[in-house]
Length: 384
Image (cartoon, rainbow, N blue to C red; front, side, top):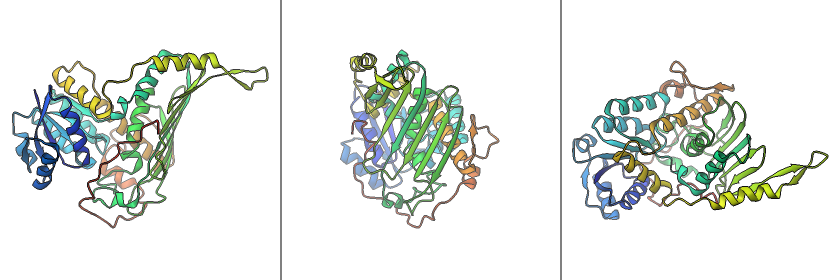
């Protein structure tokens, strides 16, 4: 039995606990830590947990019966508490984003190496039926060479969202919609196509006055043989999420759709119904996932603890995503094309030097300790 400790009692901790409880044959949540004892007590009562309550992380990490930790804290605390947990010889599941700089990611990677423990970074959108099926179709080669893709990571938040004290500053949140909302879609881009060669970008804040950071960004990622455009915002009513992929033989998209064209004598398109049917039949023949999103991610994490040879989303996956975000920010701020990788002597490698470069679009004036604890959405289903 794998004993789990949870650090942080915000809304996302409830998602972790619900998923762990689905695998009660493998694990048990035995400890909750929050600096406010009453929050931890309320969480235990709400979730029916018989767990020990801590207000001091160090005391919690001294408990040798705890095998693994879920980090459910604001982004600026991810690196610190992940490293503390790894050095206490605990496995770690860390919420997104992995960290607030590439340097912090490297420090976390070093902690994994010296402690020989599992670190998994939450990227639950990898475990959606549409994504796993599209990945299999890409791997099948039926689309031919991929020329172009477009990602729309579109969200809606009001200014109230940024009244929470740790949101909306470069120091604490280390970014706006790109870092904290679209990071999952950047991870999906890397999952499907690998890391790009370079990026050009634009960002701005158009409608969130209590945030220093961007509420819209637009990027062009260049690969050796393809181009990917990426749109992110907090301005989109309906939060319309989509991915479009065009290859030489056909184009597919999420929400699922497939189109194929063949040429007329004058170069105009004619629907290739046979090719479209072939790809659509393949999609429909692929199995749905038994477990999805956080449930699947946590099951993979538990399986990796039992046997590190099992597949899981690792610290390397998390670092790749942070590096792409930082390159996008550099490209937007410096108004230039940025090539990968970001080297250690680059100002955008370290948090403080990166922050020193960034435009503060507004002055944050409202700093609330908490917002109403309403159930949160974890991204719109692609089918909506």
